[in-house]
Picture 1 (cartoon, rainbow, N blue to C red):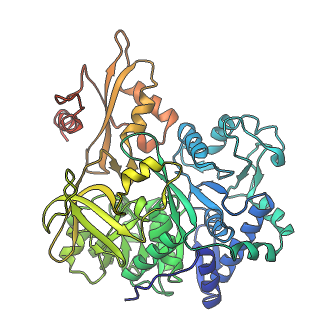
Picture 2: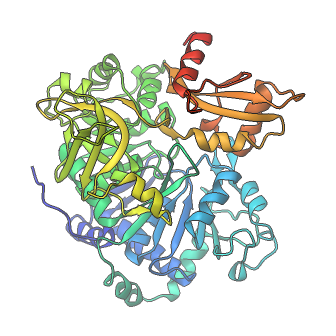
Picture 3: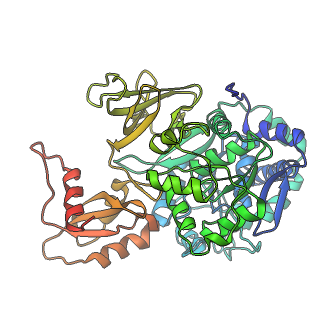
Length: 550
């Protein structure tokens, strides 16, 4: 197996693949009847880069992309990698509270947005956030709330405008790029370094608001390369991608794993069991990625048997714990005899460990595999930091090329995550056996993983605190057969105030993504605490499990 590093920027690597496999399928959207070869995709990336340049974007600028798995998202990512701009990935379920924070904290100069996702239109949110966008000249746009934001670009399936005068369409941006010479773009691309930051992905801890994880070309290109190697990817493979581009699962485990092996990408714009099954059948996909919930919905769909998935051989199941028996169902019924698991986090680009296609089935269904090439790992005592022997539970730590460049404008948070010896402390509890296979058994942090989405209690708590009837709130994760975990909010009301579960859920639903809405709301007079006054969330979880019969 090849384990050498790829010392390229993503833009330079795209040039290389386009020259070696010019006519091979690169990007295919069955529903759109869109099919681009590697040469055409590379040309589209250059065209988009020149469009960005025409609108004032240059090396080092931050460009926020808020859209589902549209082709324009991919064009923008590849374009920025050629231009030296930094893509800021925006969760498609964000609402105004989250979007404003991200755009401000990331210092984004441009925002590209689509019509929205099912049940969530983006244009009204943009209108409320960017006062004046309805009347301003797009070339002179300014925002009091976001003074660094200078351009707003809209794209939709039918190419229509947003109705906001201050925006321009993606096609209009491309048209503007015709005034920029190829030489001007080439001159910038030549100055880029593989260790430059190419994207910022937002994640959180148990305190405060989301943190922008800065990842370099070198980080994500090589992580995708080693992941693709472990899956035996070749130019003959075709990967169905229903996981979101804005997440590391979509960007690195999918897109980067494909471009490093000239593997065809078959994205699904928004997950639907039948749309995924149709894409697999229509394009004879050899691999499909997803969180366990996605596979559950496909296998349990009454029409599953009407689709031909015999072309499949591999794929990644990650994002949350997968029951062993369910993994066996995927292997048996979806023909995925070489399905694998990846473990990591955004701060590690994200893959740290991974099972291999030829690992014994017992190892593939009961562990998260072994360390990827050029990756160090260890288990430490969470209290003392001492390295623990095999088969002893402790905190999982990692070190190597895969570590983020840091959290954007958060040096203290960076220092808290990565110690002075360069070890990233993941906050996950796990063990490593005598053969080097890792297993994850729990978490030190209070993070909730719901259907593959990381949910951070503090962010939801900060919002619920704003409710006029709420005196105090604590958010915990509780077990769920369908999603792995669900959100439960414990609330103490102010004296004389009233509120019920519907009030609280509605309050959150208006301001945050749907996956952050508590499934359960429990009202209480006090929270369990220890002698030092520390709130004991594990006791609250136990209470919820008992009362809700979970």
